[in-house]
Amino acid sequence: MEKTWWKEAVVYQVYWRSFYDTDGDGYGDLQGVIEKLDYIKELGIDVIWLNPFYESPDVDNGYDISDYQGVMKKAGTMETFDRLLDEVHKRGMKLIMDLVVNHTSDQHPWFLESRSSKDNPKRDYYIWRKEPNNWRSYFAPSTWEYDEQTGEYYFHSFAVEQPDLNWENPKVREEIYEMMHFWLKKGIDGFRMDVINLLAKIAGFPNAENPLDISYLGNNPGIHEYLQEMHEKVLRHYDVFTVGEIPFVTPEDGVLYVGEHRKELHTLFHFEVCDYMASWDMQRFKEIQKRWYEGMWGKGWNSQFLNNHDHTRIVTRFGNDTDYREESAKCFATLLHTLPGMPYVFQGEEIGMTGVRFDSIDEYNDIAMKNKYKEEVAKGREPQEVLESLQLLSRDNSRTPVQWDASANGGFTSGDPWIKVNPNYKEINVEQALADPDSVFFFYKKLIQLRKENEVMVYGDFETYLDDHLEIYAYTRELDNERWLIVLNISEQKSILELSSDTDFVVKELLLANYEVADKENIDSVELQPYEARIYRVEKQ
Image 1 (cartoon, one colour):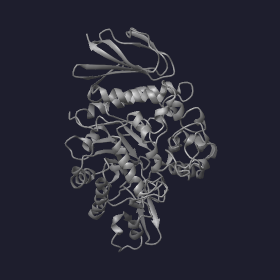
Image 2 (image 1 turned 90 degrees about the vertical axis):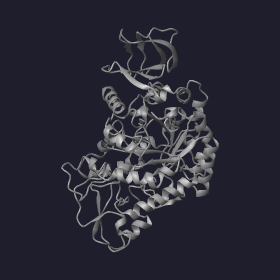
Image 3 (image 1 turned 180 degrees about the vertical axis):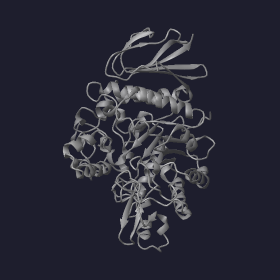
């Protein structure tokens, strides 16, 4: 297996509009990221992933881009970005940007031209049809929107304000590659590629047997040719890191995107957990990890994450955000940083921030949630019932501002925040975490430091034990003569760990734990506390 800098990296996701506001307009900004870089560096982070800050009408929080080479006023200026990139590099970290090239804003000059007439030179920059098919989009009941100006329908995988680009048009591809060169020449260190497997569409747009299963939007013929062309024309010229957001993907598909000799992407996000496992399911999680390890290990690189800007915070969705908030936060941190693949930390995760439940749909900002609420209420469902059914998995659960201290608005802004701050900011905040050596923050820091100092956490082979246990996840990582044992009780109950008598190792040293552990404790049979996590160094018998 090739050793590379990016395989050994830990990535920190900055959703800048909720990170830190320096000008009092209620939105975080790029200057706010600059002012908190030392905090990110203190955690031990290698790479910062910055969500879109391009010029945008902001219908979908910056994922509807109207100018790929401009900076949204809310975020700052190009000068601020250049300074941010310089300050990141000064601290020995790297910065990757969101690449959103499946679609643009309907306010992008390309689309304004495209919709102006059927014979406009940029008509074919987007996808137009005289009649719609029955496909459903992520954010709306149809992928097609009628345009009265030309009497045809345009295609959108997401909101109606986000028309999909026509990647079959070589001029579109050249425009995108030029834009990528623009940012890479500035010195950025790579891209997180938004829904990158949606670029290729099924020829002819036939009706779907089951339009509710929207997997027909991704992984279609032609996608690998596009990505290999992107690599050839752009990426191979720079020492950069790429991660693709790739829904509807299996490990077998995954290797085609990130195989070490495929010349496409370096690593990927799959969504078998975050999109299809609404609450914690130990057996299912074990099965997913085993299948992806067996399908990818030694061939391509995986990513490990359990929350981001689109998915509810870990402790609220999968852990316990009341009685065992800190314990479950540390337990899941141990899981993510010791499984095979690259760990991602979403801002606020490192202090155990929780999700929210706002009282009214009017307090939510998430366009996907608001559209779904409107659609379901229109069917005659009770509005309160619809709201409650959507709350747990609302994207706004992870988008509330970072809680810096116990002052007004959690120290995030001196103005009115664009979305309400979680009311628990007085109990859960960065200032409190930095003052407590046993906090979630310092546990993350220890985990990240262990990973930096021990290649076994990066390149070590993975073997599981107690596969049928419903509360305990136990596995080893092994590289050369170094072997570590990780044991996790991912439940709210105490649970007995009993390793088989034929286990071929003995414990040598406890490296990290989120509870006090007695010296020389025999782990052949031990009672683990709720959400207890331990990392041991072991030796073969």
